[in-house]
Length: 101
Image 1 (cartoon, rainbow, N blue to C red):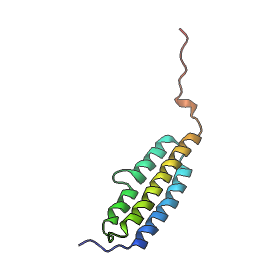
Image 2: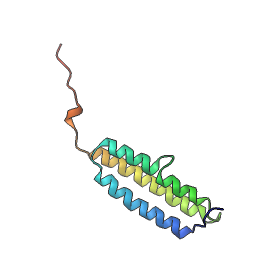
Image 3: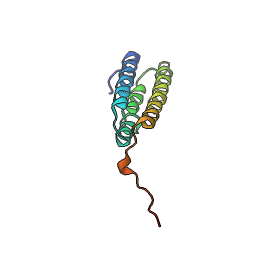
Image 4: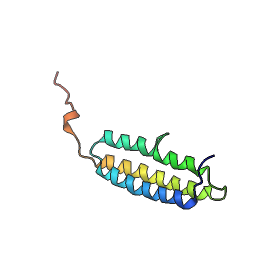
């Protein structure tokens, strides 16, 4: 039998995940790190998916509240990832200039 979980516990998990995601995304130094965060947070086996899986143990009337909050969080994380990627310093070591023929 699965452990009992409450609406408050899932809400707390989502709030903690939101804070942790924002801090980690803000500290990311390169696109590869951002991609790893995306997978860890939003991937099929990511942390948000874990919360959504636990949502199935809530009573039916409470599930939509958690689902809506999780969707908002997902959109926020995606937005933060995109913004951070856009603001990362350009690494010129990966650029190659065309040669003159």
